[in-house]
Amino acid sequence: MIHGVELGRLGSRAATVGPEGPTLLGEVLAPSLAAALAAAPEPGPLVIAVPGTLDDHHRRAVRAEAEALGHTVLRIVSAPLAAALACELPARAGRFAVFDLGEDAFDFRVLAVDPDGVVEVRGAVAEESVGGAAMDRAVADILLSELGLRAAPQTLAAVALAAGDARIALARHFSVTLDCVLPSGRRVQSRLNRHRFAHCVEPLLDRLARLCHDALEEAVLRTDEIDEVILVGDGARAPWVRAFVGELFQRVPVEAPLGAPALGAAALAARLWGGEPPALLDGLCMTLGLEADDGYIEWLLRRGAPFPASAERFVEGPVALTVYQGERNTAADCRPVGVYRLDAGAGARVTFRVDADGLIDVAAEATDGRPLPVRCERPA
Amino acid sequence: MTAPTDDPCWRCGAAAQGLALTCGACGAPLPPRPGLNAFERLGLPVAFAQPPGAVRTARRVRLLAVHPDRYVKSEPRARELSLAHAVAINDAARAIELPYERVSYLMSLKAKGAPRRMDPDDWQAVHELKLVLRELDHTDAHVERSRVARQVAEQYERGLNEVGAALDAGEVPAAELMPRVTLLRALRSVIEAVQA
Image (cartoon, rainbow over all chains, first blue to last red; front, side, top):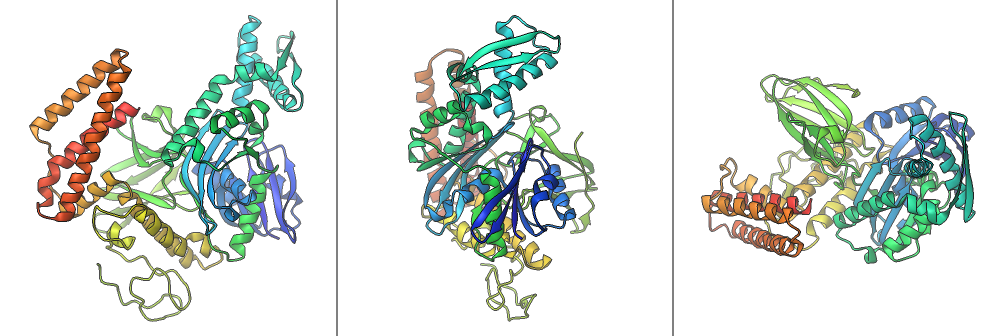
């Protein structure tokens, strides 16, 4: 059996390819590949859809887990691209935008689909901490401040949890009551409607707009040149997010089917296993860089760069090279994804390679052509 | 162009196939040819002037022919070679797709080792430009700032095309163009600072 699985940070979905195409097997409320694939009748070829921001270490762990379960991992693909396949973009030439707002991350892709059916990333951007959970925290923060309560971490977490429930309920109702018992035992009740929720999360929506414009600029496209905007992810189902995207692109966005990344991953698995021509040309959604001596980041591969790709640097002596992902200039503001130690002696050329699964391989070669051992460590 | 090697296909032993990416007989990816520059890797003339979209199209055609997705069921060597091709093709396209990168790359081919220097007058002009922009940052003179930024961008575009044309014409030794390329680099950093 051919499968696809979507692995989020809070939940996972699996799909399988039957005679009528990909169908969802089920959903689990845990970031667990094994649990999601428990409903699969037998192991087989598998494509895994992951958040674009997922780092090298986690990607490797996911692959190893799937292989330990007996699956043959054909590809690890980013969730918005997998969703594009589920929306059958290869059958429709044009310019598309995929707006994937999950619970804890945002991933936006500008895609060009040519008549040959190849989906190519022209612009990409991803950021953590701007998803649905961040919206819940923003609402909780404002509510606590209105009530004159100190936003201690536990209190904030309790109200944010209730705000999350309210957010989901507001997708169906115009107005709901947020009801929450604080760790102190005090009960908090507040009436929330869609307008108020949208007002509370306005700074986050502004941030999302800025990110979308960055990706469009990279793709050299204006919002009115996008033929269709596709909404993916639970966070994107909120009515104020739909309205925001509609206003930003001046068109009604289309909602991807439930579990689109899992369905798309299964469709991709079937394509790859069936020997069909490549359908996706991916691009990095976050910049990769090295920490320089002064704490600044020296870019290796910029956001949007098509991958597989590589970058080289020349180093001397024993070094520990820390690779970061993120768009800021300083290492302190980016996320470390791997530390690579080697003794370069009189000098060595180090190659950082991102493969088709988004995995980073680092190899070093001495000036005389001798390969040097590189030890990879997970950053603290 | 770099001469093709005479190695037969590693999988089926078919005779050497010039600069082909894959074996015409069995479809296996052939080892990427060493020593090609980015233009040769993409089958493009070594020149600044390229038709619009030429680099993108060349990259796409080659990448689709040897993309790792084609070889997911193949033996490890085929998978490794297709990945090596995909990396080489994407790296080549990244090196020459944008005009400034293309000029820099051509300079690295034609003026290797030439010292990076800038005419003192240009250096002074860029320094003054930075001071003007910094001054405008502190005031709210948005219109004036935009006007200056536009002028810098125009100067940069013009300079880029002139240097590119000079490189293609080959009438001036490439090393003599280095001060102008260094000026372009300085202008580019000013533009990036303005955009940031």
